[in-house]
Length: 262
Image (cartoon, rainbow, N blue to C red):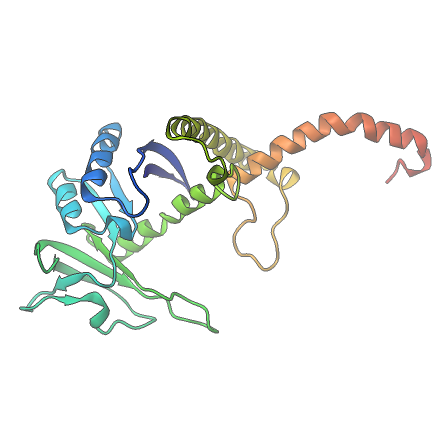
């Protein structure tokens, strides 16, 4: 379980803790992790972004008591009570449909706990040519507007990118198969390397040389083919390749001098 800080379109690892078993984390484990992480960001305004694993209204209450803003995605089975209603109903039975979005204030959460009031932001992407959001976004938030809630939750995509880079997209962390102590040491080294690589890739883009060290965009992709992390890895190979291949290229040109112009 890991806490990251969103930085641009990326997320940089800050603090983490191992779980005793596979599966979802408990509220007690989440609070223990956040207590330590929030101390690091104490001088700064903080908004906690989390997926459906952190859906508990008790977590939202704990954050609001510490004056920490939050954007927590909810499961469609979550029970809510809207203004003017008496009974609690699950979100999946409230008639939301693709193409809808909205913002509801002063919503009470949890049929058993009845905590709140917290705001509810919902967004269900319209399907187009068979593609689109299969599940809506149900977001419990302390933010005052729909635009703020959706734009900040969209920043959580950087966390998914980070995990992909640390697994199949880069460091192949899932293939190490080491024991617990070595795994934590490996995560520490990986976190430092990932931060350095991401910052190096960002520097290459600022210098406007990223097109030389990474593959170009594909026509079918709207987003860049490589992140700052991937650009840094390709940049390292490119620089090493220039040193290694220079002698080989020179020897090749000497063998065929009429090809030098090419």
